[in-house]
Amino acid sequence: MKSPFVYGKVVTGNSFINRTEEIARLTGNFQNYLNSILISPRRWGKSSLVRKAATVVNTSNSNIRFCFLDMFRIRTEEEFYKRYAIEIIKSTSGKLDEWIENVKNFMGRLSPSFSFGTDPANDFQLSFDLSSRELDVEEILNLPEKIAIKKKIHILVCIDEFQNIGNYKDALEFQKLLRSVWQYHHNTSYCLYGSKRHMMMELFEKQSMPFYKFGDILFLQKIKKRHFIEFITDSFSKTGKSINKNYSENLVDRVETHPYYIQQLAHIVWVNTTGNVTEDILEESVNELIEQNTILYQQILNELSYTQINFLIALSRSETSFNSAEVLQKYALGTSGNVTKIKKVLINKEIVDITNGSIFFLDPAFRLWLLKMF
Image (cartoon, rainbow, N blue to C red; front, side, top):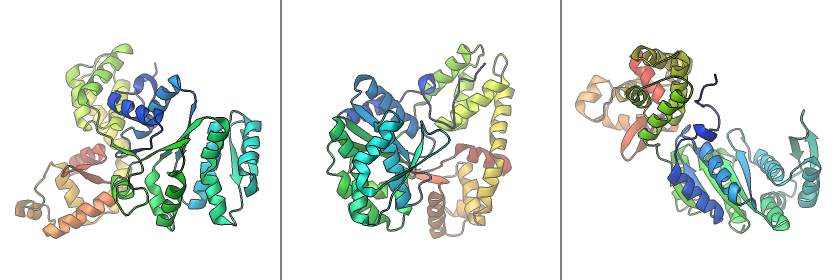
C-alpha cells in the first residue's frame, strides 16, 4: 500500500493540509490581478500553496493562465531571460507548432533559435542575441503582456526563490529594470515568493529598493498543530493502521510543527508500523529521521567555528538568555558582542532565523541531531 504522506515535492490533493485563510487571500489577489509577495522559511509549503491557489482559481476562471518559474538554479541575468521567455511561451501555448508560432510572432526581432530535448513535444530551449541589450531585454520582459493582450487573457507569473536576483551581477540595476517594465503591465500580474526572509524583506520592505510596495506581502505562518494531528490520525486509519492522538501530537511536537518534517517523520512511522503505533516505533522512527541527515549535519558543523557550534548546542537545549554571564561562560561564547555576530552568521547561513524576537532552528531535525550528539 502506498504511503499517504508526501514530502520533497509539491503537495497536492488530500496531502495538502488546511491553509484556508492563505488560499483565500492569494486567490483573491489572483482574481483581482494584484501582485502578491509570499515569504516563509524553506520547506514550509510556499510552492504547494501557490499551486493550490492557482488550481482553485482555474476551476472558476480559465481566462487566467499561470506561468511558474523557479529561480533556484538560475544563476545569471541572461539565463533568467531565457527561462522566463520559455516558461511564458509554454504556459500560453498548447502544442509544439503553437510554441514556434508564438516565438516568431512575439519575439521575432530577437532572431531566436530553437533546440529540442529528448521530448520535443514537452520541452525546448531558446537562444537569442542580446546585442542591443536594453531594447531586447525589455521586449522579453514585456512578452507576457503582449501575449495576454493578443489572446485576450490574463497571465499570472509565479516566480519561486525570487530573492536569488539579489545575488546577480549588477543586482540593483536588474531589479530597477524589472520594476520599470512590470509596473506598467495591466494584463499580467506577479506572485513572487522566496525562503530567505531577510533577503526578501530587503527587496520588498526597504523604501530605497525598486520593488518596495510592489504587491501584497504575506508572511506564511505555521499550520496549527491540530490540523496536522487530525491529518496524521485520519491518514493512518484510512490505510488500515492506527496511531492515537497522543502519539500524533508527540510526532508533530518533535519536529516543531514543520510541514516537511511532519510528512517525512509520519511516513517513516507509517512504514515501520504494521498495526498500531507504539512508543518504541515512534522513537525508532525519530532516530531513523536523524540518521538520514547525519552526513549533512556533520558537513554543516565542519563549516562553523567553535563558538558558533557552542551557540547551536545552547539553542538546542532551549537556552534563551544568551547574553547572561551564566550562559556566556557555560558555553564559552565570549562576549555579548560576539553572540550578536554569531547570530548574524547563522542567519546568513540559513541555519537559524529570528521571528518576534525569538531565535529558532530552520531545520528542527538538526536540533534533534545536536541533542543526540552533544
